[in-house]
Image (cartoon, rainbow, N blue to C red; front, top):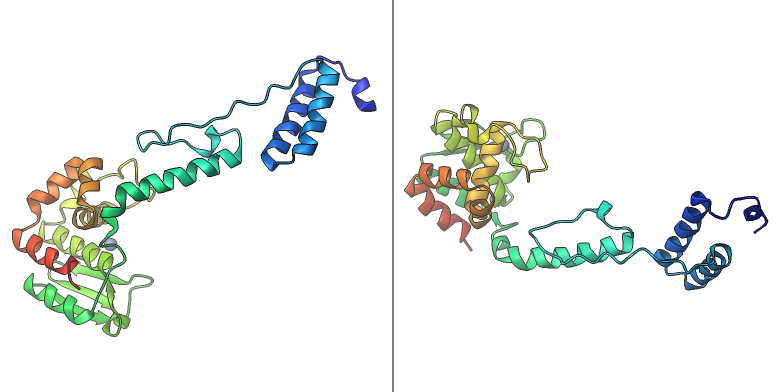
Length: 236
Ligand SMILES: [Zn+2]
């Protein structure tokens, strides 16, 4: 402690240095070193070290805290775990059609009922599938032998719908920018297709998070589509 003798007792930086050390040992769960530095702190400044107050927010989906809101990383981890459990509990019902895969022949017949041709070809770069007009979907040819993810089928169907509505995504205000909750920067056509995917497999979520888009799809999706899509997503 020789160094400290040269520093003014009221030096704010010194106090900060000690408190950082103590907080670090608390965070690491090193009680021995924590106690040691607490003792030194008391000796030097004549007062008990007052630890940072615990920050234990009520875990709620209405107010989400960030890592920076926590003084200790451990507390943030505990919070994140609670939040994950809460989210999972809340949205579990929405996940039941997630990760579902449909055999290619079933996809071909589904498309046929909606007047859409299905083709299998070499992919465009990294794309799994693409749409160039309102009556044809082209899948990577590996899907001739593999089941096709439901999300991919519905996403491409969204592009078909957009095409059939004269590429409405390119001039409607609804799809001109990302909703604030979206983490990706998407083009209007992709926002449209993802919005359509949400409408189909997470409609409750879309309704509560982006009502205008929900209403749009509810009005624009033909009844035949709604009926056939329902059959497809409940396919076993
Ligand atoms: Zn797309």
